[in-house]
Length: 278
Length: 278
View (cartoon, rainbow over the protein chains, first blue to last red):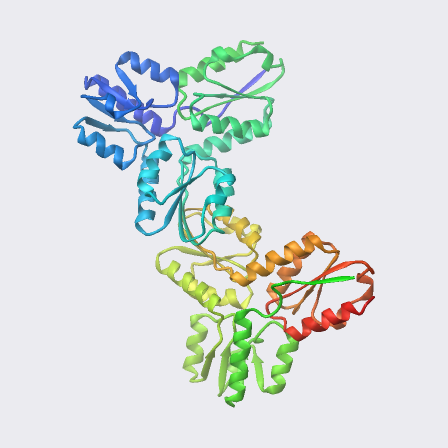
């Protein structure tokens, strides 16, 4: 068996930065510490941090005092204002690439464009972007939502940072027929792009593809789908425990990649377990 | 045999307007009258106007006095300045849709975008647009030229008014990967769009497609290609004389469309001749 590990796999800059900020908050003893939603979409990491004293909450009303960490996905300006109004200490761990996308959405709205966000409506990053893009904005996840997009003179586009380039291209090629002037910011982050490109190529060249990362992680799920389209023997797992021997044959070439919120040690355990299979 | 004539066939607004302006110039006796290049890409019409006193010239140096008609395709600001410097009377018959595209190209250049023109490099409309888009601009005709387009922070796009929507979409979906901020003006004219859509649908539903218009007309040639891709029995003719009986079978459904520079009487003669075949 041959194992290939993707060059771009695991923690991205934004996730690494957010986790470091969380650890810093712990070392400075800024307890109680909360995150609005899980700090990253990886249950194992979240569980571990909870044990250390960082509690994920779904709603700000659950927080009476202490510190709130804004996770890498960012929040809307309305949520930010609410945290401030509650006089809580804020640690803003919004990924700089998400910040850039937020800034682009706000500037498009200010310049009079109807803002279209390419992304998943319920994803926290997109929820934050909507806050910057204004009430008139619209989220488009795939071609099926395009019918509801009315023609406009000025359309402005931003993209969820972890979207696939393919989906971005597909949607843009239709949106440009809906407006006379269309201003597009390609806010897909560079690391995401490389990770996806890398995984796509790997899926074609290998016999089995293993994608490691949270089942609730959008970027990992997208990685899984991109690989599955190219290789039917693709599996999405959160930890090494989920691996099944029957997925593999002795002389297989196995490709392994991981989402942006997958820690190195989880990835390493997966590699180790697969290498011991035969 | 059943004959269907496309709803949008023949003279477009810009061509009709330019020809009316030429006739006006004749009636006002503004002789000698010149056009820079043929006034429209239809040899029959140009020949007819030449007989009345409107001479197409390739170069301004051939014009010493009189009136110059700027044809519907427009000219670059440099050429316009040259006509003015020669103190010739100017009749500007630039199509308003082309004028709009020129304005868009100029505003993109002014705002610091590297301007990309989707169109045919040697077409007079595109040559004019380049003058507005600046020295740094680049013409992209199809996917093959995309490799030479370097990545840039700000890319601005305009389209030759008679380009096909399909080509526009195909190129845009690649260009958006070359710049972080891409501002697009969809300057394809509405009439062209309708004409092409109409022809595309017709080509699928008919047995034979006849596309009438100048062999030197870019928009007619594009119409021909769009139909040919959908119906192998597609023929491009300039006049009824070129029709061949062997193209048709007795019970065929025949679709007829015509380019934006094709006069009504030429189209009518084609219809008449086909209807008499069986």
